[in-house]
Image (cartoon, rainbow, N blue to C red; front, top):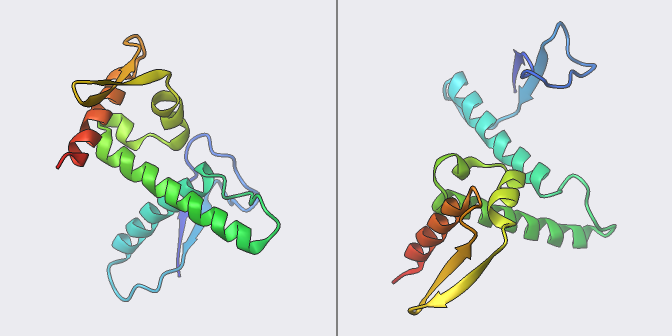
Amino acid sequence: MILRRERPHPGAQLRITDVDGHRIVGMLTNTPGGQLPDLELRHRRHARVEDRNAKDTGMRNLPYHDLAQNRVWLEITALATDLLAWTQRLALTGPAASYETKRLRLRILAVAGRLIRTGRRQLPKIDPAWPWAHQITTAHARLTAFAAP
């Protein structure tokens, strides 16, 4: 078990367990050996992934009363989250490659447009006034390039 004392990020809601403005954070690992800073960095990066999965996909409140149904729902949700994360990493560049799910949905996924077919190709037709239209068309071109034989 690794325990460390840290200051909460600016604007963070303080908890009743925070002492003198510091928060105690614990990590449990079964990794043999290794340098402490490397283990801590690896666990913090992984915790960010887990936090994103839980927070952004609604895993905090399970929708069903039955355990088996919740298991299926969690598997589907985890699969969708992984698919979204990989698509985002492969298709988007710059700051958009690391958007949180809500920002990605509002700027990239929930845009009005059409998928038109011309010259045996499918192209997204998006209003050029949309600030992220270039990101969307570039992402579509990159994904199409991956699919090409």
